Image (cartoon, rainbow, N blue to C red):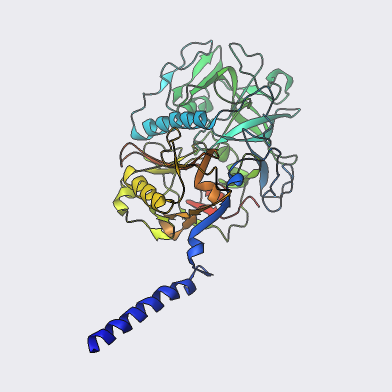
Length: 484
């Protein structure tokens, strides 16, 4: 009888303990079963037919207003109703095409960081031909901003990319080839502030680290060449010009590529804005004003907008993690991931799985790539919590997909990332699923080929966060709901 009573007391104690979990407090909020799941309208996974403009960063109401220390630009998805590149004549890529191109970019990043890339190539032809050994730099991203170039200023819509360093745009007279772009092609002969960079200058020699190619020389003008992971490329003259980020913020003598031979999947953009860590990136070239500090918020869908902001702002509510330097890819921004949670449960993944793989955050990679041990654990737990929904065929690199045709509303487990320095990212629902159609909605993660391959934190998982890059402070910050 005594044992039976003792067992009853233990059972009562255990029951009370379980019930008390609903009143636990973490970071100021109570935890309930519902707190570990997202209830979402399936229709919200797809962009609207018209653009819904989000608020820009505080103190910035349009893409031309600026305060003393900061400049904000409106970030727009390349595809969808908000894009300035949208045209009835241009068919946007399918989800399968986007993911296949994403794989090319990732392969290029992996090769570069693993040290398997070919050595720097040489531009020996004064006619500015393509580098002989491509692939040392990565491909283009998925979001665009508009900046001004030249005197008088010409507005150009450029893809922004944290995985690239050199900023370039197509230039008249397009000696070899220029792809079709939405903006008028920049003509340096009509600008009073344009200057060619000489072959013998120190700036010309900096192209080696920024592009992976030894620069060439045409007469006395420095010639750059850069090729991306999807075989897109730009070759042309290296020049200096006035760059205008807003109506009041401009930079003289900005070094950039004036493309004379350009081909690739740039989607009508006029070129690329390089946000990497090299000396030729826009981050370094504007350091005297902005102090190597910038942030962005990627919109949750192709029918909404975000922002790219240069300079310090209020980041008191952001969570920070140390910014790492990657041994074989110094231009990339390193991130330390320590663990993953699914549905409120921290997965039993050994810390060594994450420490054995270099990790980067990248604005141009779409889908986060994880070590297979980590991905398999995430996938298994996610699948266990999604058994009520019918499975769907795989979509390119995404192997965990569902058919939500009969479900206007679904409940999915939350996914969170534990980062170095104590930061924890509770992903927005838009950062967990990737939707091709109502009948094919997939878990937006993929596994690498082995546990030592570089981990890449992609742009789907960054959605709705303001991501802060503080290079001087050596830290990377995340602020929830940064687009609003």
